[in-house]
Length: 266
Image (cartoon, rainbow, N blue to C red; front, side, top):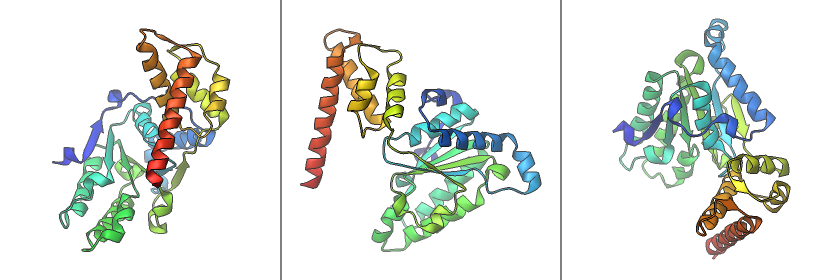
């Protein structure tokens, strides 16, 4: 039953690699610190520093939070446990708290490992509709579980991610010793991301021009645009994509986003 709530991957089973990601210097520094905390667990235990290894990833959808968390599994050589809070919120009174406890017990049994909790804000978003108090109890259970798990003592690197940090109250924020921000990539980062995506693709495209044309796009958006350009070329049995293929894909992507925003606002 527990396997219905979580996804477990071995370090070798993931496709995401840290070397393939475009990260900021601050992000790389925090990852390096987490690596050193794993390496020197016994030393940290000896000197009494236990509140290390709980990181909150914050940023808009598509900016690389989940991809980075999965890549750390391969980078550190640790099993990866992924859970979405929306999956463990049960309609049955009391089951939510039990599900949360079971996930954290599993992480401790699989240690050393990474426990990645996506949609960390989900519980907060459901509080207003909680007529029976079950979600309030689940929040308390979740916060207590976060308190009781430790990288130093239990060998569990806890990473939580949220697209909506404004929904988290101070009680949730203070559980994390680090907050890692994921923002929309700037011009330089967009060019680097595009270079990574296109490194195995035969493409006749000016990366500087494409980076300028994709202002406001996330890394996920850029991958979608390139995917469409590749598929458009394959429709004509071509394995080389042209500037026109990419501009057409970009136009389609922008039009789809415009249609989505119009439908959402109507």
